[in-house]
Image 1 (cartoon, helix red, strand yellow):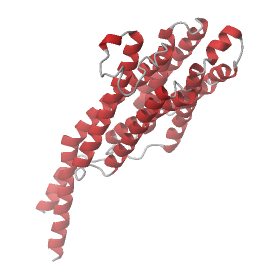
Image 2: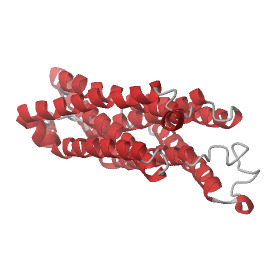
Image 3: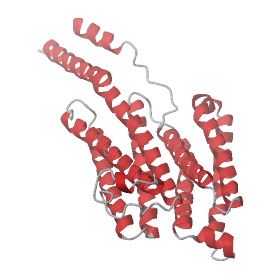
Image 4: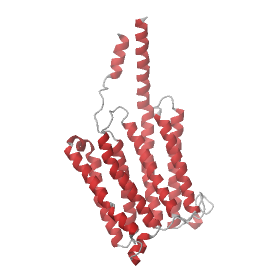
Length: 324
């Protein structure tokens, strides 16, 4: 009886192991691939949204969700209409990707980790909220708070998607360093606040009023001052990683990218002010850098720098146990 009980336990363990191997070989690569596509689509969505704002194309399509009553408004097409139309198209593709991942997580619910369907349902909810804010930006004629909320929800979508991707990568790794996560969370939060101030700056025309008439400069000054704590927190992270040599070795690509983005972001910010915000390429580049900044910081937060667990030959050991 005892032998049969032990044998049954070993068989159950073996079935769980086979199921886990099937998940890693079949389902996991699909979710990873879809997750990568979603991240690229979201960064493109944020950048195109910034270009739409800079080019004053937010109301180029007077109706929603169609543009001039059609899916593809050939008769009204110009640069501004194209930007707003393409922004909506990219948002639609992001929604389809996330809906597809959610549907797959429901279909494969028994074969995948329990947290995946729940997290994809959160993503789907954020997409619905994001679409609602997109409609409100048109209905409310580019109200500043609506535009700001629209961008921040896009950043939340990006952060959530990257966290899911990293959790899929870290399926067999130990718990990460909590202090390292907290250290990285500081510049991420500061960058989100900086982006909030930046959108308020552009959507209320405060920057143009300040540069042209030296009036209403408070928001612009706060935006510039926020560059100092962000820069300090990034440099502190780099210094800490150098001190903890192992951290820098395992994350050097991401950390090097952070330094490059930090300096280029400062340069683009200075150039934008020097040209009185008349060069869209600098402002759009500024928005792109902010998106990449948030993406890399989120990746570092949820990326596990610890070593893998010792799991080699686990399948063979289970087979040996059953045979014994």
